Structures are given as C-alpha cells and as structure tokens.
Amino acid sequence: MANLIDSITASRVWRSFFRHGWPDTEINRSLVMTTNIFFHLHPVKVSRKSLRASSTWGLGVIATILFIILTLTGILIMFYYVPSTEMAYDSIIILQTKVLYGQLMRNMHRWAAHAMVLVVVLHMLRVFYTGAYKPPREFNWVVGVFLLLMTLGASFTGYLLPWDQLSFWAITVGTNIAGYAPLIGPKMRFMLLGGFEVGQNALIRFYALHIMALPLLMAGAASVHIWRVRKDGGLAMQGGQEELLDIE
Amino acid sequence: MAVETKDTKAFPRGELKTYGLMELVRGTSPLVGKGPENTVFAFPIVAILEALLAIGTTLFLLLFSLLRDAPLEELANPDLTTNPAKAPWYFMALQELLLHMHPVLAGILVPGLVVLFLIALPYLDNDPADSGRWFASSRGRKIVIWTALYTLLVQAALIGFDEFMGLRGLGAASPAILQFVGPILFGVLLLGLPLLLLWRFKPNRREVMLLIFTVILVSAVVLTISGFLFRGPGMHLYPPWNMPDGYNPWSSL
Ligand code: HEM
Image (cartoon, rainbow over all chains, first blue to last red; front, side, top):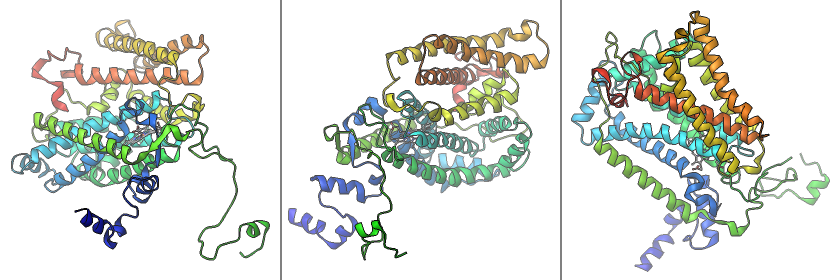
C-alpha cells in the first residue's frame, strides 16, 4: 500500500500536478501555498492571533463560501429558468414541483442570497470596529465598499427573476427610488429597466446582470480583495507590525 | 540598452535572466515585527478552518432550506398593486426614509453621503497605531455603546413622532419645511448633538469615526426594522404580530 502511494506520488503525472512533496516540512508547507493558485491568495505564514474566532468571526471567508454556494445552485437553477415574462413564473413552478431537489435548490439559492447580504454587512462591521481599514489597507476597504454595492445589486436583480407579485412590486418600488435623482434619475431608471415600466426588457436586463455581469465583476473584485489582504501584511493585528509597506 | 553603468557592473545582467535589478528602495517587509514566534504556517491550519466553515455554512443552509421554502406569490400583475408594496429588506431603510422626507433627500442625498463617507473613511482616519483592536480602547467601546443607545431611542422616537403627529401636527404646512428643512434639521441634530458632547472629551479621529459610523449603522438598523417589520397596509405602523388584512411582513423575504 505504502509502495503504491509512493509510486503514484513519484509518477510524472502526479508531479506535473503538484510541485512539492508531502507537506510535513517547512519548505513543502510553503510550496503548497505558493504553487497552488487558490492557496496563493493566502499568506504562507499567518499570525496566531488572526486565527482566533474573535479576530474576524470568519465572516469574510463565510461571505466567499456563500458566493460559491450561490454560483453552484444558480447554475443548476439556470438549467430550468427561462427569462421571459411569459415563461419565467411557470419555469419556477416546474422547478419546484417537477424537478428532483428543484425546490431545495431554489430554497438554498434564496436563503444564501439573504445570508450573503447580512454576512457581508457584518464583515464590514467587523473590519470597521477593529479599525482594519487604516493604512496600508485603505484600498482594500474601498474594494470592499464596491463588493458590498455589487452584493446588493446581485441580490436585487435576482429578486425580479421569479416574476411573481413580490418581485414585480419590489423592483417597481426599488427602481422608483433610483428615479428620484434630479435630472439624471428618470434616465437612469429608463436605462435600468429598458423602458418606463418593469416588463420584458427589464427582466432580460436584470437577468444578464444577475447571471453574468455582476458575478464576473464580483469574482474579480473578491480575488483582488482576498489577495490584497496578504499583500497588506495579513490581517490587521496589534503587535507592532503596523506602518508596513511605507516604501518611499 | 547595453550601456555600462556602475549598476550593471555591480549587478551584471544574467544571460538567462528575464529580470534585472531595477532599483534599490528603503522599506520594511510585510512581516517586520511579526516575530517567528507569533506566526504559524498557513498550511494546513488555515485550509482546515476554511473547510470547517464551508461545511458548517453548507449544512446550516441545507437544514434551513429543508425547513423553510422560498416564497412565491401569484404571477406578476402590473394592474394589481400589492398593499403594502415593499422593496427587498436591505433597501427598506431607504423606503422608510422616503416616508419622512423629500425623495431627493431620502433616495439620493442620504444614501449618496453614506457611500461617500464609507469610501472616504480610511483617508479621513489614517493613523494605524490602534488598527486591529476592537473599538480601539475601552473608551472607544463606551462611545460605541452610548452612541448606539442614543441613536436607537432618538431614531425610534423620530419615526413615531412623524407617524402620529409630525411637523404638520405642530402647525407646519409648507412643503419646503415638511419635506426639506424639518428632516435636514433633525438629521443634523441627530449627528451633531453627540458629536458636540464628544468634543468636550477631546476625541481622536478614530473616536469621531466610531461615533459617526455608529449613528449611521444604528439608524439604518432601526429604519430597516421599522420599514420591514412594523409597516403594514398603507405603509402605516402596526404591531408586527397584529397586522390588518392578514398581512405577514416575513412573507416578503
Ligand atoms: C463579497 C463581499 C466580501 C468578501 C467575499 C470579502 C472577503 C474577505 C476575506 C476572506 C477577508 C479576510 C479576513 C476575514 O475573513 O475577515 C477580508 C478582509 C477584509 N475585508 Fe472583506 N470581503 C467582502 C466585503 C468587504 C466589505 C464590504 C468591506 C468594507 C467596506 C471589506 C473590507 C475588508 C478589509 C479592509 C479587510 C482586511 C481586514 C484586516 O486586515 O483585518 N470587505 N475580506
């Protein structure tokens, strides 16, 4: 058995995938982090204190996980959903009643969406009240503000898609608020809805934003955001490591 | 290209190298001050913690989704307005504000200023000395607690006042006063009073930010709860457990 494992991990195929040995030495543990793109978003070493629950409550990580869950359940729902005012509502009914685990998929997508808005806000509160927005993390805070706005946008555009009374009137009320801006308000609302009222044009626009534009932008921004945590010297911790990166 | 300088002599260009020394700068690396005794290898502990969070989050969502179905009402009907017609809960603070002031204030100016404040925050308060410490100090914690209590009471009182009496009840009639002057005055007082009080204790910037942010946060929470939970038909205030027409605010999640 040990022989078999050895011969697998020594094979050219295995070693073309993983360019490091078993992670039981310091050099190999570093290589795990630096040779894998997902781990590479993390630092090689982290401060002990940053691992304590009370440092972050894991909220940034949970937001990332919710985003991944939303992507996966969203893809499954897309197999059935039709973005037309004639068929959208029926396709949701079919998803719920005829598709195996369809109702469960929709439930998970819906609740994860609400949870993500809540968790992202809580994450922002954690960052604010620990003062983790201060130099050198100003830029990452600003990236975070845009992530929050995009999270709200993604949730809002998804709200219209079931095309029931709840969606229709919530989006009507919500986009009316945008229409109040002096001068550009009505134009902005028209652009968002593709018309003066919530109808087929609005549905297809919200759909495109919801399944493509916003998730792509968010994935990009979240990658920058998490990578930047490493580049800013790991999490903000007390202990004299501040005034980092003051390159002149 | 191939100019010989003092630098290229000291650091000759390697034949196979695709990079070269560009410049020497002074600076500290991100790990300065984080002694080796304070750090651990991220692998495997961070991977394990993240996996645990992923499993926990997924299980929680799965369980919740088995217990509660996502809502689905009747097919959309543009000719039949629901009463009340509410935005999603995360925009309810804005919709609640709309009940109290001119739409340009509630829909554009206030949210615009909040977003601007958030973006400007790290540039307004940029002393990293106390970064990474919850509430900065025990004084900071006190400021947050008292500000939160104050905002909770005043914001709830303002909502109640506007619903049951309002400036109209005090005899004001001009739309400019009702829609602009009054609300702006209340807003300035809401933020200004505690700031004035704090000023007497010679606060640093972090403490000022703690106060401003907490006023915004607690206001948003109170407005959201009021709009989401307490507004019923006609967008009037009702106890959430006793709404007319069988309206259930939770059904709009
Ligand atoms: C989609 C939304 C977001 C995701 C996925 C995300 C993800 C993360 C992750 C994984 C971390 C590492 C530490 C932790 O878990 O707390 C982090 C840190 C950070 N986040 Fe976010 N975040 C999001 C939104 C925001 C928002 C809205 C803000 C602020 C406005 C923000 C500001 C920051 C800052 C400044 C740090 C560094 C904190 C420190 O060094 O202690 N993020 N984020």
